[in-house]
Length: 278
Image 1 (cartoon, rainbow, N blue to C red):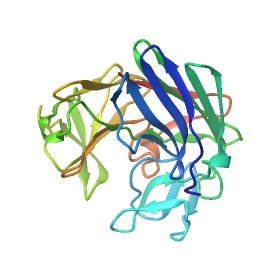
Image 2 (cartoon, rainbow, N blue to C red):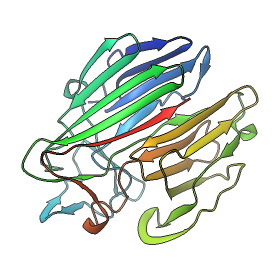
Image 3 (cartoon, one colour):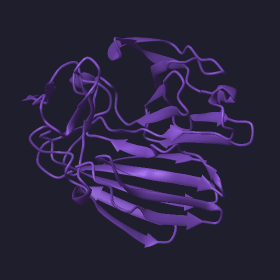
Image 4 (cartoon, helix red, strand yellow):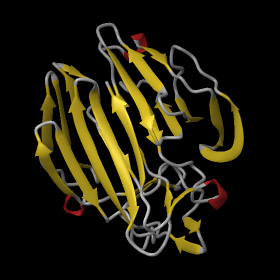
């Protein structure tokens, strides 16, 4: 399942990017502006059908309860054994093609099944323009059951210069979700932001359309803009890491624990969201 396949390469002007399957996930494998990398080697994987940690091995939504198998190879776990970041897929689970030199498309129905019995299709478009890379994701139910929105993306952002300790960071968020043992609570607080990132950091923030985070290095800068549809973002910055993750989340961390918190897509509807890296 962790097998890689050759990414689809796209380009526009000085921009180039690749979309492919890597380490069990669909991923933007690289993004470059000229010879400057905006993503680290880990790229920017799609995390679905849920983002973050579950409290235990149980999903309950819309009258459906699922007990997850702790030994399921599609499920990762954190250091405390809690299910983390949804389900892994295989490269054959995705249909990829490039309709023109500057765009790549991918789609899959394999993020639903016995472990997430809310049938849906995920469609992804990555497009390069003079303004950078725009990633648009669409969730569409494929059955008679409504689908909770809980996916997100996990970009490993880098900026010019070899020493991340010299990067400066601007985060635009005003409020954050209070976490307890890295699990979401229903409490909120004013955002605790600093221009120079404090490490380690693993926080969840409320986001608004157009919110833009920026990382500046000695020789270049990288920004991620939540163009539409993303109401939350995680900021993850481990001690000593050569990246900073500002992670667009389409649904709240409590989507599968508190149904009243969830964004729900009914059959016959679609949910669409986008972000831009430049």
